[in-house]
Image (cartoon, helix red, strand yellow):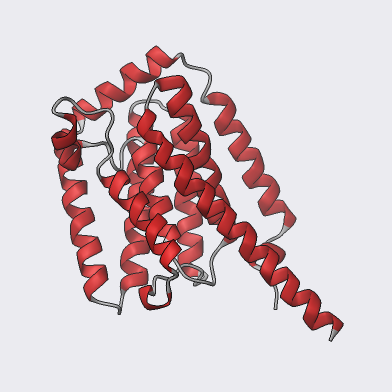
Length: 242
């Protein structure tokens, strides 16, 4: 038995690492004030679209919970839609890091689905997966930043899910926490590390302290991926010895 990382070519990991480094570097090219102004304007401009995405989120999750058949397709396509949506809106507002990041994530989600490496069977999900998945989905949907007061109320329908990076990353991270093996390590590592980076970026550069949830969920996703790779590698070693 081989792990997903073993089956992935070194070139894919090199390209992935290079893209993530570029994304991190260019994220510091604008000042915090400029970023804040852009994201506040974006969130205000897409209020109607945000309502649509929030309603769609509830429909997708509700249908996915009720019907097992087609759940992999439904959830995968919703994640692809969120990534594509955030990428297109980032092009409109010239947010270079988000354009690169969500293009990368969109491609990886499609690759994971087509290669049958993204599954959602809640009967086989570990309680800890359910906990972190639920945490990511709740705060991705109800993202307490970039919305006007009353914050707690407006965030239910107007937070920039599918438009801004942090709520979109957190939601994707939450769904991936709920996924079952076999999983695509490339996707989990990319989403996990990008969510982790923008969690710290949001807290220390933009004062978005709600982004602590991004850090928590990302650490779990990356840690679980690392543990899975270690476990599978250990199984391979024992098999080879035998």
